[in-house]
Amino acid sequence: MIVKSNESEKNAIMNIANLMCLAARTAPKARGIDNIVTIILTDKEKEGLVNKMIEVANSGYRTNTFLRDSECVRKSAAIVIIGTKISTIGLDCGFCGFENCKKCEEMKGVCAYNSGDLGIALGSAVSVAADNRIDNRIIYTAGYAAVKNNILGDNIKIAFGVPLSATGKNIFFDRK
Image (cartoon, rainbow, N blue to C red):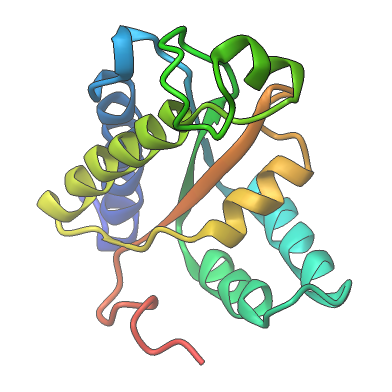
């Protein structure tokens, strides 16, 4: 059997993307409550995300990062999207800016632990990519577009994308 490098690299990227989702799932979470959701996009579905990023860029969004990042996602072999459900966890800590979890829910606030757990899950996921020498970058623009396209479901309001690449030069390094 002969396996050409492009096929081998594509298979490796998908294997690592799956391991990244596993790492996000098993990352520590406040009170052990798992609100993390992950997906992997390739091919047509990835291009749909790119199109949404371009749409946001052309709608007059505040920065040019959506257009710049859309090219990175387009050039990538796959993108892992990691998001969090918005759900209070019952600590009544006030970190969300409200006096307790009930008030946060009433005001449709975001539990601070949701964002913190998402950050830990992202760190766990990208460490898997780095440990396996897959070029990657955490980009908010892809997560924003995924939320706007409802790719992760109705209850996901915060997400980030991690495009993956295995080329001779890191496509995420010399961005304009």
